[in-house]
Structure formats: structure tokens, C-alpha cells
Image (cartoon, rainbow, N blue to C red; front, side, top):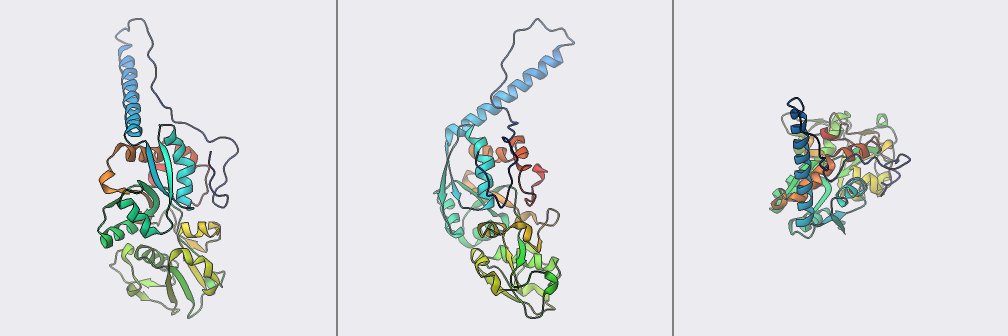
Length: 309
């Protein structure tokens, strides 16, 4: 069993509970049923038929698309996929091939050109912006556990120490710029103009900036390396993870109650494949009881979709 990075998770001692059953129940020869027994017999037959149908569907998905190529990067969501989802699907006959792509734009191009089948490293807001800019038809098919965006110390280690003219760095892509501004608004550093959808916030939408803070937009993966150049930095979960920064050290972060649905990480596929059996099997693995038990052993910092609560 693969283990997630030690700075994110602590795997409980012992094996992960495997609570989902595969295959279908065998039939038994029994004495003729009385009328009182018939409803139970009917129910048993219905359950057996359902199990056979589900097993056949799972087998068909693996038969039609036995190899799933996925974008592999050292991100929290990729590691969770490999540790918790891949083993479930391997038992159903799937094989997985990791493809390392470091650049997020190249990742989406590879997906649109079928060089990879899927990835789990983007949220809906980002994908919608990418589709609009690039003319692609990438599709988010299911929200998955998400590590929150947070504000971390730079040269200052307390939010109360903010001073006039302080510099704050955050990611420069449109969706995560909006996410950063939403977080800054929630902690009271700025006020945003009303009537604007939070996923579309830009610097031009700032209504009040009482400390005259200076905002510097940078490529997300580079921010942690220059954190002491700024009073505070805002990092996506994946950037904090890759930099070895403990999520517990965030001075403030998105929470289960306030994260926007469009900022939840997703299973991303090429839109033309979204209804194929293998995609449905990947979704079913995330929604399974086996994965629900697995995620209970992971870090409390994960923000969970409703189906895993």
C-alpha cells in the first residue's frame, strides 16, 4: 500500500480497511418457499442481480479501457489518488501509467490531445478559465478531497503584525488570484466591491485597502522559495505540499464551510470521454465505502466533498 507524504498524513497502524466486496454471491439450493418466504427470496434475487450487473459493468470498463494514463506530480491530490484510489481500481482490472508533466498548461494540452486520460490537480474555476482561453472542452466530473489555500508567514509570523505598505505574494493565474483575494477579504485585510462573483475577483475589484498593501502576483510554484521577501504569502495546497510546508502552520486558510464549490479539486477528463465506463469507475472509487474508510485515516486538513462526510 502506497503511503502519502509524511508531512500530510499519518497512516494508522495496520492495514487499510477493505470494506467493498467484489463479485457476486453464489446461489443455494433450498426447499420450496412458502408464501411468507417469497418476499425475502425476491429481495435476495434482486440483490444478487444488482451485484451481477455492477460486476459486469466494472469488468466492461476495465476491458474497454484497461490502461489509465494520469498526470503524476508530487501534489497532495495525486498522492491521495495513488494511495487510496489506484488500489481500488487495480482490483477491478485496471492498470495505471503515470505521466509526469510539470507545467499546468502543458498538462491541460496533453489531456485535450488524449496524451493522458485524466488528472486530479485542478478545480472547476481553473478549468473553466482554461477552456475559455484555449477553446478546449475539458470537464470536471467529480469534486474530490481538497487541501485548502492558506496564507503563511513571510517575514512576519502573525497577521496582527500587518503594517502599511506590506507586500503579499499570491498566484498569478486568474482563478487563484480570485481565491487569494477572497481569503484576504475574509481575514479583513481588504474589502471587495459588492455584486461580483468571488470566483471572478481581480485586483481592480478591491474597494478598500486600508493598509495600502502591495500585492505581487507570481507563478504559484515559485512563491514559497522567496517567502521572506514578503510579509505574507498565499499558497495553494499543492504549492505548500511541494515546498514541504506544514499545512498546520497556515495563519489562515479556507475552511469546510466557506470554500466555494468551484474551488474544490476535481477529477478532470477530456469532455468527449466523460460518460465512458472507466470514468464512471474512477468516480465510483472515490464514492466507495472503501475510500471513505481510507480518508478517515488521513490528515484533518482535507476539505471533503459531501459524499465523504
